[in-house]
Image 1 (tube, rainbow, N blue to C red):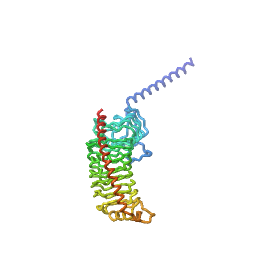
Image 2: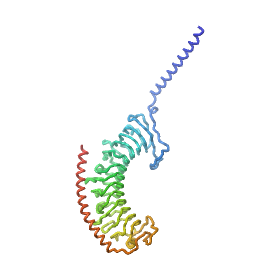
Image 3: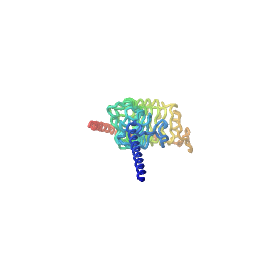
Image 4: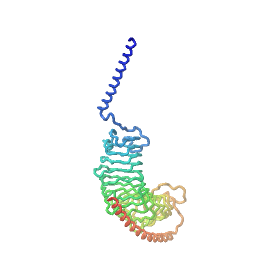
Length: 428
């Protein structure tokens, strides 16, 4: 019996410890069951010093990166911040439920993310999507959007959103670095507050401007670095346009009178196109202040019918011009002219320099003859022969322009047919 006493005490001690452990576990379970959901939620935080972050005013952004979520992740808390930048943030559907957890956000950027769908939050002021694998961007047809700035960059071969018309407050739309080939501005019809449209670097071969297009406040159109071979038909429908950038396309023949009707145009960029310019019809651009034709391979230029009374800056840097025929007498010293990088005749360049202010983009150093620090050919040139050859060139241009007009008429009819087909597809 002496041996049984310690055994009984041990059993009693173990029983007490076991009861205490069970009680503690039960208490923890009860506490978790009655604890606020906020204590159990996943709280996302801003990265203090994100790498390779080039946004304007970087300290004003909350960067959240390297996050993988389930679609049904309800227990997620986003920081209370007006500017949120999601980078490498992966979820199958960035849904209204998740977006409305960003209660204070006004500016949202999504970069390098993978999502099946992304819902546009109606209360956002600006939205930017770039270099992301997103299959669908949803603009709710029943919501009233406050969005003013919208950017889609680098979402290759993905369908663009529908229902742009719901973005009634949109002022700036940027669709850059995408693979579009063809863009019909009909889908933007009715965006009466839109001021800036950027379609640069999109591989666009055809830009369609419908007859009934109504974007009355469009001021800036950027079409640089595309594959356009000719100006869009109906360009004059954009009658309030102030800036038109056609830099680095494939335009080879340009009838300048095609710009007629753009009476508010202030800046025109044609640089980087291997141009042959026709001057057979009057060109009326009364508000044009800045004209750039840099690196266009121009060998001749006739300005006889150019009516540009407001022109203040004219840049023909890096061409092959020997002279400009019929340089307007109406141009004065208020016009800054950049002629560097050509093959000027000194006589012709002197005549121009007497009228306007010459600006040297890159000073020419080694040459025998100069005018205003710009190298030129001081040898004798038979300008009668030059003018005779020029007239022959103009005759060929005239013949080409007739063919070009017929081609334009045919192209315009084709665009109308394509527009009808597009409408039928949309209705289906």
